[in-house]
Length: 260
Image (cartoon, rainbow, N blue to C red):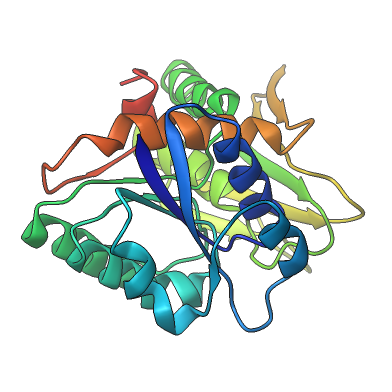
């Protein structure tokens, strides 16, 4: 039985992950980390989750094999080093964290010989989307690239982690050396750049389109999430995959899904 603690248990994503874990026969939800401003705590308690404050994470981790973080960049920066030092493996889906935060976490994971999966998107489809982005970039190295992402009006960070990861993959293949986040005014001729555009509207779960445009044609690759359940399914796969590891490494969803 894999014992799991979820950070951000009352959030949009966290509550769905908690409900999904409760339905599994090989997992036991032993804790839900809830901030002082957490969401529907009553609903979470009714689901059988132990709710505690952010400052009591060490207590929850005493009984955990895997910690899932779907909180905020600030909370993750505080919690992830505690998790790694507690000999607990981690699955991290929080976006917006700085390179410095991730470098520190990776160092502590290595030092304490635990394992982690870190991804800006748990979706199986999105991970295939990223792989195809790399394939198209290699086949169309001279084409202009623009990325458009749409999410609900309450999403805190922009651009999305999924869009940034797509841009990183394409840049690594094409050598594009500049990211442009929207355009305004007299922008001049296009350089070796990738344009990234964010839309925040309504209740859109998530939509990403990468445009590869040549002088006589263009190719568009789009992923649309119809339900947050798709992210929960990927998270469950990551929990199972990382639960038995203790290799001192930070892994990707590509590894979990065998797409490498």
